[in-house]
Length: 382
Image (cartoon, rainbow, N blue to C red; front, side):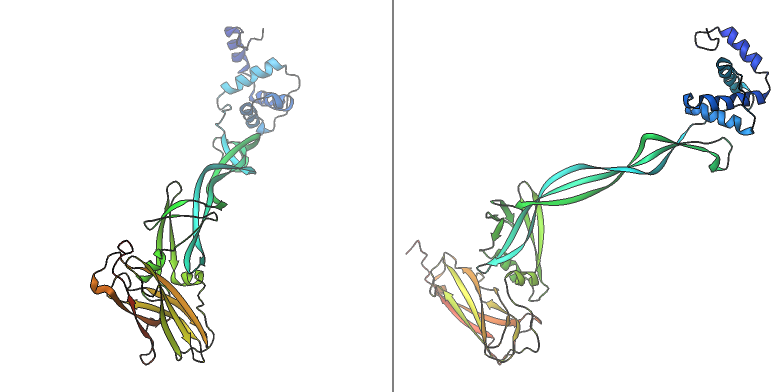
């Protein structure tokens, strides 16, 4: 039995170590070099590093040492003063070997945009989307470094690549959206009003809720409103619409080339029905005609009345070219119950230029008075 194996004789092993400890140090260095040459691939990493330190003195290798004596010599070398000490290896990161993307979470969501108007009504288009959040992990080559105690030159430390082992470094999260199609037949809440989309995911504001919000804004091109839109399962969105984007969606021309003039402006108001009853909905049309030789730019009308249901309604005409007409329609709801004194409702439509917010010159017909004759009896009472 080999005396230095775990099953060997302890007294005999200690005796061998004590006798070999008296060998010249050069002998042990030679033994270490021999181990490196003949048994390198079979030695653990720490042992190889230890031997490399010992043979760094240039001693020639021994070639007639038996394997059992070589192993014992290695143990004896560790017992000598100033002998080899095995440092703790340090992990180092090399070049990127490969990457891996993993999905962190997926979330159903929706998007909303302005859509082209239908029959003069502002429309919104809803789209169903899927939001995927992923993270890309980079895998770097893994090295280990054995630092020589007391050595100040890092280049003398030994570095070794560990094949098949990598150091993972997680990257930042990345979010991507994928359109799944229209949000069809969906019930949503828009600023407190419940609506349902059609098969194409479109809903049109026939009740003029969006136009009504712009009615309360200043008469300026940069006015805007923000809509709070919520879905029971998909959450909430906010959509900000500028007046410029609103007019684009309504198909109202806003740009004009060259000089403009308001001369030749003619306007009239038409009602449908002409003589409504209490509780009816009335279509109020502002018709503007340019009888001049130059275009009129960004024309807007606004109602004035002591009746809240008729007051402050904006009519957008935009650019009116010479010898042409443009019209805009608003729908108002006559209250179901009215006092007898409201059998005739008076109002005026003033006309502005949206560029400046100033009313047009007083000598031209810029104020169009009109009267709505109303039967105060509701349809139920008739």
